[in-house]
Length: 131
Image 1 (cartoon, rainbow, N blue to C red):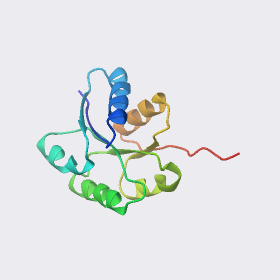
Image 2: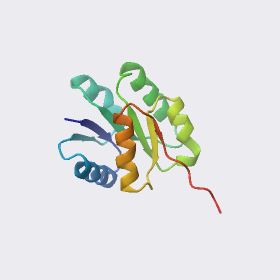
Image 3: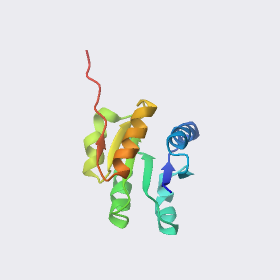
């Protein structure tokens, strides 16, 4: 069974991501957190296959939190969902994320990204080019 910890400040985002992943992975256990700062307690309490989280786009504290989680739990991959995709997609990988996906991604891209990360690969959304 796949165990995914989903952390996002916005309930509607958490519920939408959960619904998409539940359809793709019906036997997955998905637990939601409102605050990403609760990660460490949840990750210590039981084993997880991956974390999916938002990251504050304009605050360095979010990147520091990701780096701390990666130091404490190096075997648990983290997929970052963010509205700030052009500004921060490479910074997410440099901070230790296994992947980065814009919040405007299609459901199929989320499923693909999760599959790639669970297979031990990295995933980076490709920013759309301006016309």
